[in-house]
Image 1 (spheres, rainbow, N blue to C red):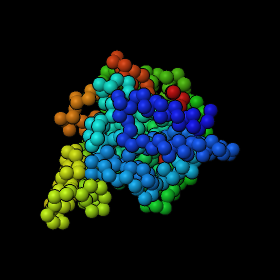
Image 2 (spheres, rainbow, N blue to C red):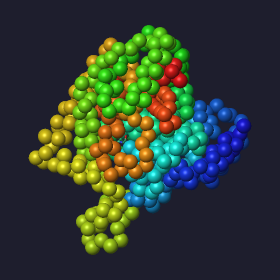
Image 3 (cartoon, rainbow, N blue to C red):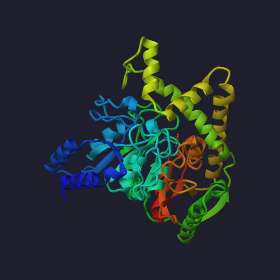
Image 4 (cartoon, rainbow, N blue to C red):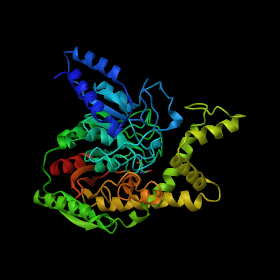
Length: 453
Ligand code: GLN
């Protein structure tokens, strides 16, 4: 099989399903085919991802390839000047970028319905959402359009769509993967990670994109171990913690059942599990929306109609231009977050909201630390329910936010978490099992995930 064959299969599939799935915002067919030809002319094919077709979430900057963050504000950002570090690393290992993937605008959302273009649909059943914000990244892998994709996860945006689309999605430890070239949403929470069909593929991609980057001041200076070597299939003696809050009210019976069945599998493989508590997790959603919106309000101030993207045409002066460009360019959800964040950071409210949320964040982090003194991994569902219907939650932001209740604590604590498929609901929709590990212990997370698979 040649690289050209692989790339050809990828575009064939895309042309077959895209009018139903809408996973892509931009395709790069001409360049991808040219690159495939070039790779095929090489005799040396030792690169780790040689010729593998990949999709990139559209908030990750790609040199010369349109990068919109699914925002109308950036619809004309056709020609970024550089590649994000992760893209550079993929290029070094010779994967082929097929195109840029749809998402909720600026990664704010859980259903892809906040895309400023057109929402992605769940390939399992197009009446349902694919999850978000990396819904395009999950759907493209699930529909067989690419072999892997990159997403970003601030509060669940890799794991939740992976769960809804029945694929494997990892949010790495904060600082393991460079954020240079990732358009910032909430800088203290954002992480890039791989979405794949198998745990092994996921480990292979992480091996390529992880590692210290001087261009990202929060990038950790740690050795990248071999993740694939950790996939031994052996979980004898593994100590699993199951937070009672993760199987409590609000979690669908079918989801709970699938997770309990998964725990039985672990038992049969020689692992043990105990019920534990993450007592502060009930504050996680409120804490997250305060902190992430605060950071977003600062990060998105760079979109002023001067430096990036679309400029309003009928402005009378500079301030008016800022105002009109932002009013016209941003979607509703993005505006909601900017207003919430600006309020939480304003003088007089800072102590009551932002500062308090920071303190609760520490408590949530401590909850995990305490558990990890005794246990190797934490296991629970990725989401309280399988995918919901398009339109079902869009008019109720609070219900939409609550869907992230099981993924958000992981970002607040900065630890790694993976979602792997663990069964189907009676409607035939995938259910995700979430495995959470210690800081920089992706090896154990992968080992546990692989043994179940
Ligand atoms: N759904 C969450 C939000 O809307 C998480 C998004 C993300 O992880 N980028 O903020």
